[in-house]
Image (cartoon, rainbow, N blue to C red; front, side, top):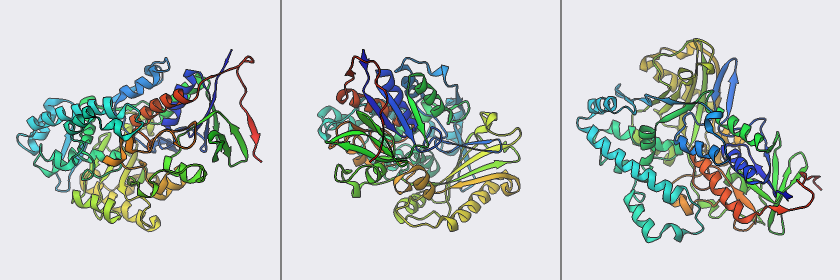
Length: 510
């Protein structure tokens, strides 16, 4: 009989769960160790008095990637999740009091755009056409493949595609070729904050993000985004994956240049033939891997994404004036990004995002009430901000602005409230520098320039998640699992044995 090689996955985030399912389906014996008490990682859940809040991503893009994750292991996504399309996509509020509602319905979208800037709809169609090219070329040539060297990216054919999809240019000025009104320029570029980067520094190829939203659509699972890791965990269990919760890893163990398992803080050692690390990659190199064994290349030169100040508000009434997704801009778009990424301070007039998921799935809040999720982009912990002082200030600015938009004084209707700061991202989720989205996505930190999903010094040590290839966001970390699966298959053959399935080996650490 065949006895599968044993693989330990460190972390039960979406990337780790996706990798575990693929590995188990391929015949590997898989254990997932997770320091928390439940799956999800950044895609977590906060439940208080009947209010359910997703703590991480709040919208699902590129659902075909999720579908492929299930089909790759012989399952149908529809047997595990029900997806709802959010349309309208979201409403954008500007400081001058104007607003625009984005939708995939072209006639309505034409009316919205023409109201802001006459002639904009024709240029919008041209913008979508470029976004489609960026989307397809990126998936085919850059996002959906492993790179073993920089030269594999810079072949003559690939260089032509880099130029074609504007990967060498900055996003904001490129969008400016299509739209003159500053409000539409902001509306077509703020999506880079899904990656935690400034549109003034982001490669123009990220025009694929608004294309993905407006052509492919924004989706939301029944039960909230947390339904995704729950579905993946269920899938993994069906495939034989074993889960160990409240199992905090203290080190990835390396013997004779090969990953041989992990040691838990409780003192238990779990042995394996390979380790797939879903912990934040920079944090893992700093905290789980002996620097004498291997170190993260260019560690001090790497750039990190922004962080976020989060407000979770359970309210006594339902705010009918809100859509499921709402974006509120501050007064000076460029200055806000300069504050976050250059000055490293919280903007005086911050932009923020409000998610009201009970408008799509009423089960996420008690009847007649709302579970509001507010995300304010802020600097990561590369700067020192005292959040005990800053949090109340940001809270007041957000609530005052919502009142100005006609929603009344939320202070009178808040039933439950929780906050989450960059300090919490660092301490609760083990994110280096409290960067909510991991490593940044400038041109020299994507593709082969991004930290590799396989360690160059330690055999059978692999990485999956936001800070390795291809990048951050739920679709990207699921693609990351597909890419790391290819690496594992190349380096960790299934072992032959005559005694059947080998048992899991647990040892007390010396």
